[in-house]
Image 1: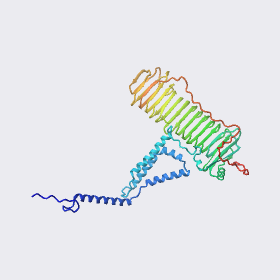
Image 2 (image 1 turned 180 degrees about the vertical axis):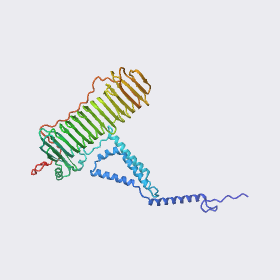
Image 3 (image 1 turned 30 degrees about the horizontal axis):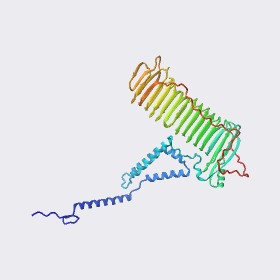
Image 4 (image 1 turned 30 degrees about the vertical axis):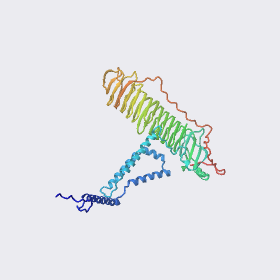
Length: 538
């Protein structure tokens, strides 16, 4: 008799006994519920991460300082696009410190990987995009606090007033100027007096408030012997444009906050500490120094030394008799023409020195070009192409990630050209003896010159003399990753002419002119019964 089939089981208590699969599901469900309960219990006791509130507090403090005017939003943005990697370092140190403090703590908080990655990508994206955008030819040029008082127009109607006064001041004196907001123009007077013309501008919603603000902005001139000070107050939504005439031998020490500075036709020393704005120096007899925090710099026809430091956009220098020193960050183009003394340039990417510049030098983000220089030329840079012509030597050039092209017109000193990633192209003139020693580690060495005596030549090196009858000028060419070409120098049929520099405007004749008034601006006059402003003697 055939055996009966086993009974069908479809539940926990069927005739055939408990279902093993049902029991396994129940056990799995119970384990999940126990794990969830344990996770909820631990989450209730875990301490939250400190990194996120710290980041939020820092952002809030910076935003509050910008909104309150304690720091400039433009300044903060310029700082950010340069130093943004420091924020990643600070974030990493904060996370590392939090991890160290929570070692062995079962209730320690784990930082969300997704949020952290998003924060890192956001910081890096803003920094990289901002840096390239500011330095590109089509880049962003955000309006700073100096661009036509763009932010002040949001706070009311424009009101203005003019003030003029003068006082006796002897020759060879010193004038100190402090103008927190506004342009300053200084020129030589025809007498032994200081002439001051002030154009005051405020933005308020009422005439009564404008009168109070204009009274606060009134310039103060204090004279003590051969020293004088001219100072204006720093108020919200107000600026003072100063036009000053002083004796020609007066020395100037100036602190300009937000505004352009122009000094013309003085024989004393000039010192300018510029916040935001352009600085122009013309026909200065004494030593000149300028510290920039942004804006363009221009100097023309200086009889003594010139020193520029800080952060500068475009820089143009010409016809300087003394040594020129340019040091800092130059975000735009640098053009130098006709110097009678050495030039020293130093930035984060480029360092060079020129003993005597009869021609032109131009520098931008990708190229360094020098035409017609005498004496020693030394340059060290990266990520730039270097082009030199009408150079006699000595010459010491080093670069990486760029090409070097040199055309010599003499052999007055040793020539050393070194390039890490790029080609070297050297032109040697006729009538001079040169000892060439060229080597390219991962490149080819080629030459169309005629060499005399023993010549050692291969695809990657060349050692030989271009003439006979004596010791030639040493020429050393080294390229790690690039080709080297030695050829005959290009013959110049005409001397390269320096670009004509535009003549700056001369000082006006017949005294200090009244500054132009903005159209449709309520002009507040000084009350008739008010005494005229008198300078304070010290």
